[in-house]
Image (tube, rainbow, N blue to C red; front, top):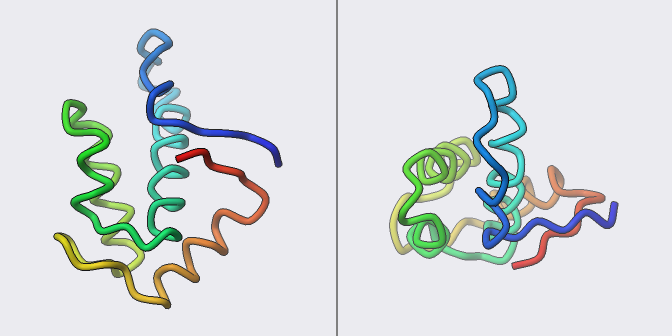
Length: 94
């Protein structure tokens, strides 16, 4: 609780090793879930990470895993509810 993620801080630290890939993924996934909760389309969220292919892939996988449309369409209420459930206790700064 009280943790704040921001895409502007992602990538500030030097590259993590392969064994620490989950640490690299975690803030991107949290940000993506928050974006889904806010009803943002896949394209809007993906644009935050336009220059980072690794992050873009994670955004796409997260949207797909929750059954969200890929494109300009907004996530369904059901997908937004699932995202909120995953984010319980985490505060994400957009």
